[in-house]
Length: 292
Length: 135
Image (tube, rainbow over all chains, first blue to last red; front, side):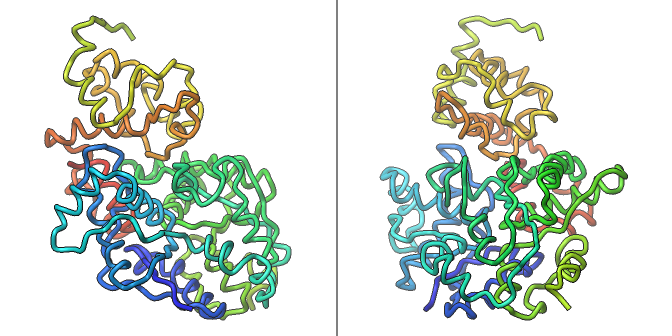
């Protein structure tokens, strides 16, 4: 079965360790991620101003590409892309005045009125494949691996585009359970990593990271699972800064959810690109006999 | 902080523009501070998120402009989902940022970002950062 797939910019460069294990894993599950043609950057941060329609053009253009291909659903792996595309889609679906203005501005494109649905791969695993089927496909259960289920912001906020309950999400817990891992729930599961603040204060980002890692560690986690390349960068960089200036700080490895998926499905570690992760995630996996 | 308030100030263009760009009724806020309590950036701000709302509705744009608070907001929406009044502070923060950016005053100058940072930062950080910090 084929799924229309929107990669987003970072997945083609610094976050190939998010994309490549997803492509290989879905193939193992009998699905093909079909990259949409002529996709462009989603804009990365949704514009919150009511009059700022020009910033809706980039995400809407991607949705038009999907509609043109005859597909009705588009899958993302990056949580920020999901949020930006899904919110732009909501504008096109629900706000007639804005929809007319955007369609009129984009007169080189066919009119679009929000008919494509935007979903995250975790939703495909939960709603189309199902946790039970997924767990049956697991060849290398991630036994004895205690992983903090970190959502960040954009999978859960705002409520009208959230993939799960904002206050009490279960999708990552269920995902980790299906892979045989031990999910660790912790209070700061949805705390912001600092997002784009890294651009104006690169090392200040460590203040966000400290709260998240301290919380995950104190609840017994050995690693953190991620869905977003910006979280990966901010938390990775924050962790490095903290280790340099504070001997008592203990960080932990971070994995994209797709890396854990590929590993559990028994795929070769070469598709996971662990070399692109921050720190040394492979030592933990070797210690748990999940890597040779 | 000592501030001077007057009915004239609250009728300033600044107040109506914040209302227009954010789509928010500034009078909804009853100053409970839930936004500040849930804000992961609050510790790095010089004026709390709650106070920004009060200053905005009083038309005290100079005080807001002197503060780094709106530029420290990460648009994470923790305030938005936790507000008991249904007030969307993240949209007010964005409106205030845009009122500055639209006068050609950028918060981050691309030329100030070092070559090393340009290589290190992933696209997702660069694009979202430029979206929020430049006009």
